[in-house]
Image (cartoon, rainbow, N blue to C red):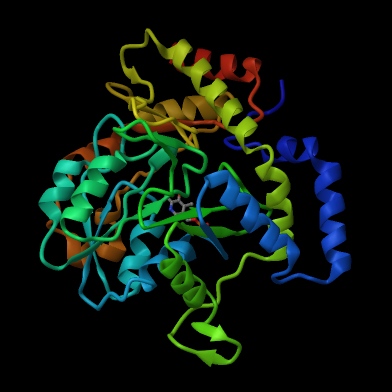
Length: 372
Ligand SMILES: *Cc1c(COP(=O)(O)O)cnc(C)c1O
């Protein structure tokens, strides 16, 4: 059996090595390292994949969130509501721009933002909402969009973990995660479901005006060269990443299926284990399993992780400390209480999930967990 890894990028690469290597050499020889046909080609192909009007590539998923907020004419002190149970990127950019993150709790089953708590957190200072499609399934977007339009708030979907996930609206329409709010953001960090060989990210929108603003902000605020209309940032997807991502995008649906197969195998194995709750998938969304995350009750999580490590099985906790508990934020958020988020931080455990898992590896993992 091959050694088990949390994410196996090597074997995934080897399957498309010839094509990737040829593309990288072609780009090296072209000397078009910034911009050019690979970047515009990837942009067009990703637009088609998402069925969205505009894709704006950028340097990484954190930049994408920052650029999205910078496009919204927000003032220092304005409040942005996000979950606390997410990667730091989602909330870090809010603070970085002098805005105030207001944390909403999540649902104990889907790990995604709780619409009732979201509603309670809205004040006259609220200026945007950032739902996160955590671990790979969509937050419940219909009620979020309804609430947002009631208060006239833009919605920025953090889709870094859910590229390719689909949400079925109440009226039966199906949308890709990231294309429902005013702006969607995503990441091509190597371990993401569509990962480059370095950093990368993108924004998406169906609104022409917002798209123009996002492009402006991502490109030093310049509408034409050396004329700067607003203060922007320098955030580009480079041509080598774009070239690699074009190839990998053609495999994305097959990658998602491989993750879903592995998740299903895990689910079957754990179906009769009382102290393990396998991922709950809401009816109106697919799950693309960026993470396969269990909830453990009455199990010593640290001991289990050590037992697994001794048997060659890596595991990880996403996230052991919620954002509102982070040192960086405590000055402002010492009084915030998010009971579900705090409980989940103690209970969750993520298992190896990627496109290259074999039945034998899954059996090895599940049998060691069940034995423990
Ligand atoms: C990975 C991730 C990001 C940031 O992506 P980078 O490309 O690493 O900057 C943002 N939000 C979430 C939820 C993520 O998982």
